[in-house]
Image (cartoon, rainbow, N blue to C red; front, side, top):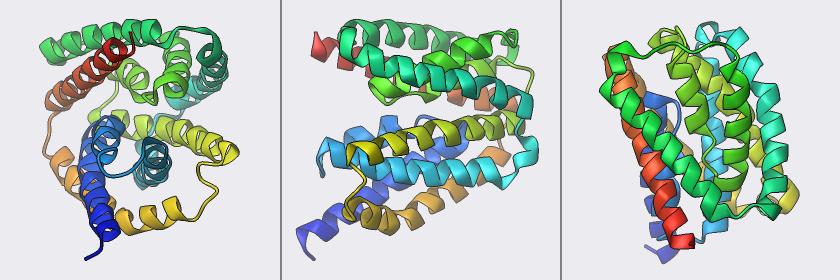
Length: 248
């Protein structure tokens, strides 16, 4: 077996793990996939490849049961997501990334502790916080490739069932990842055929991970789901802090 085929198999195995995380919590797959994938392929190629796989997962999750996606919630977030994406492009040029990464990591980590410790008694927040979640998610996605945590934090503190939470977060992901794919097309990362062919090879493993995650999800209570969200948020926060420390 050639070296490239070994890399393809490794990418597929990593895609399975990322889909498992995403299928349960609705976000966080890139925390798992990108760091591991860069051991086998260059970072720009990994970002391009997994943006295709992430979009396929978002479509799979968001459109599986769209009736559970709370329309008023995701429609409220998306316009501010666009604003945040535009702001993120501007900040990318002018703002010290290490400092902003450090602040975002500390914030996400604090929310993770709150979610994990008080998963059964999270206080609901008002709809006005959708603006903050949308802008923060758009900025974070552009600057750090980690737009999911702000949406997850907001939706986990809304009065939603676990099915509504996951489906609504899936709709947010569709728009967020679509903007990322468009950006990669405009910058040329997705103009070659190679990332599309590798993504096609990894999609069966990715969908197998989603299928496994769905079976696990249906056995979980909302409290268990929120604790899982807390764990992934904690990993997000720690990952950003480590990246900030390495940049300083």
